[in-house]
Length: 322
Image 1: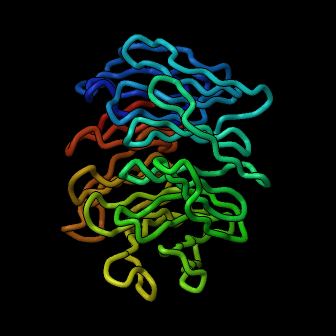
Image 2: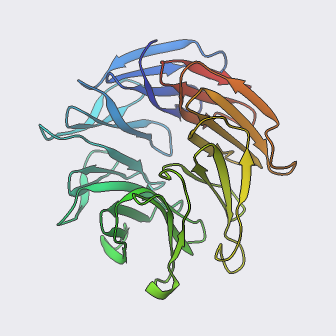
């Protein structure tokens, strides 16, 4: 396998790891020993965005060919297909409720698990630049130049608009729905406390590069972000992060390109441009407890279970780290 791995996902009740690549190919791997199970060509050109449904039966992919596909992972049957020639489908995200959202230029489409269109959200001015479903599956955050809109799945409408003067690059919502957080084009983390009052907006500045990687601790109000060669831990407990200094995790030697908290537990994994993977235990301290060097920049990290990590790289290396 020599294809740039864009994203890795767990599928089929944990029995398959999916790797989506830059040439439009989807690979399936055995999560026990990492052997290849299948190889499927889904797109002409790269897979830019991908996600797997909560029940791990459906794969959503968006490509450079302007196609969005909803595919049954078990038999490769196409459940839904959309295409707009001359554009890219850059953002795709599954809701816990089984709905999938994908962005095509200025429009977000929301599709159910059978391929029926549930709703649409239009941004009249700029292309969509980020999508994120809250963990309850009912609220979709949609980012673009000019801010974020919060769409309610049950109400089928935008319930909150959060303005910002720049473009949104990455997006997340805290589990308690107290904060919407975004990495922005002007190299900061912008935070909107909810319910929104513009006077309460927070701006975490001083980042040497753009913040594209965000991950919440499964239980504690801690958000991990990239910050050049460091990982920052922002603490949202109590009155929030305002006035608090983040914890700095030092161990990387080049820019951090991926990070992920355990699904349950206090471990964090991060990877960088040099191929270095660092594993951190927040109960032990701020230094990595283990380091592994892979070939190629680390492009995607996934906790397969509480002890095993799947990693994809820019040189097409699929790795299992135990």
